[in-house]
Length: 572
Ligand SMILES: Cc1cc2nc3c(=O)[nH]c(=O)nc-3n(C[C@H](O)[C@H](O)[C@H](O)COP(=O)(O)OP(=O)(O)OC[C@H]3O[C@@H](n4cnc5c(N)ncnc54)[C@H](O)[C@@H]3O)c2cc1C
View 1 (cartoon, rainbow, N blue to C red):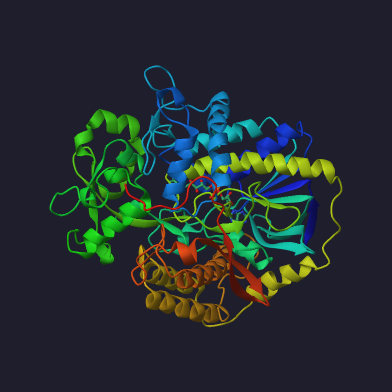
View 2 (cartoon, helix red, strand yellow):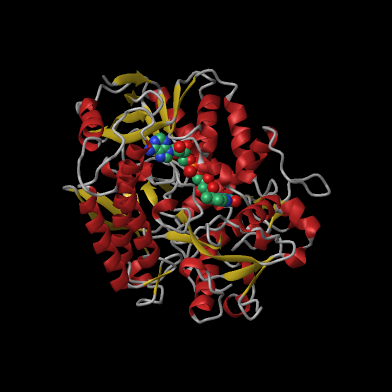
């Protein structure tokens, strides 16, 4: 029998955004709030612990930085698709997030004068990435986790895999959860829901993301009727290690690393003569691909041709102090010491600029559902996110949504009624129907094929026919998925079942991404179409929205909020 549990607030996802929101809720409610923390992995295994290079914030106006400059860099980096009111709010709040973490004991790297060290990052005109060596996310998660230990009102649902969000009459009624350790099906009810489930990186085969990052929250929010904004904008990070895709942080270039082709040339001179290796990621990734496609790369395994990230001139001391993780990963995975040899890298699927549509307060179009972190689209990053702005966004929007939910609780003290839809139905759908399917298709094979399709058809450079081919293939895979067989029939820790549910989520998100990419007949930020190579502000200076209509995804658009800066040509 399914179990029903009631809390004030359900925080769905415990990365930086979810934990920061939980702390803020406790601060605002003076510890008098009953919070459920839901995570499909142990809290500290959320992908946020992998964040490496730093968190963007203006800390040194006396040395020449300013909020206006951070805002301008973000807007220009976004290829003018960011909503400028959101950008203003974000840059003004991120410094206080850094100070909060400082008060909560985060061991930042320090300058000689004892102040927090900030390194240069791509697309930022001032060194703005606050850093704890190259393990920033890990220490940020640690600091937030420590803070949460002060509050007794948290119930953790670690290794609880959410399968659906129940929304009725525009209101959140429940989150259904498959509890892996017990095999129980649980309905979590609450006054408010925060979706903070991170990105969808494993939609691609060559990715920087942990295998657990499968876009679940975005997919189930979409199925619950929420809108997905700007899904076509997927960021390729310029430096994924060959052949695993492990991230070589932008901090490598922030510390002075070079990118070189097979002639030993620093090719960024041709593409971004001013900012060179520290141009925004979309531009650097395209430059690398152009070098590779024009024969100036190196031959790599399985078609993963590459260029070099060269740190050898930085010296052992700087690498050991500022990039210890990078060195360790290169040595362990490739037997290569970056102090002595260049690192083989190429563009790698990294970050989803799009996500669940949420307003400047992080509220979605359901009355009591908010979204924060990578899963959300507050229109901060537009068509291309700047490095170090994501962890900052998680902190800022974790704080904002925590505060907003606290305000909502004070005005709405009672729990909404039980959902009309029976959640036994959801349990039966999964435990009886899905597990007992006796089809011929292997869900692991479908996932592998999906990721290959995305690598091949929706990469750094895109083209209409190829995107269409990708979409047709994804739809075929969706049909195949209806005929899967799940080998393991047990209920406890059924990882076969989880894989199938994740694959289903990825299939839905792939379809949305490709549909939106086909319709955006221009090149902007991370979406570069060879058949429409120019930005087209007359027709496409607008956000994409995708929503279910009669069970089918439907596309519409909404305007971009332009306050200070009209679009101009992006030069670096
Ligand atoms: C290798 C790497 C390095 C990075 N470095 C930087 C950097 O230096 N600076 C920067 O700004 N950004 C960086 N980023 C990006 C940034 O780290 C992420 O965008 C950010 O941490 C996402 O945090 P989040 O809180 O949104 O989600 P996450 O930290 O991804 O957490 C998602 C949570 O949702 C839960 N969840 C998901 N699905 C389900 C489900 N079905 N049921 C239950 N729970 C679920 C997960 O268990 C997890 O707790 C990096 C990313 C990677 C991959």
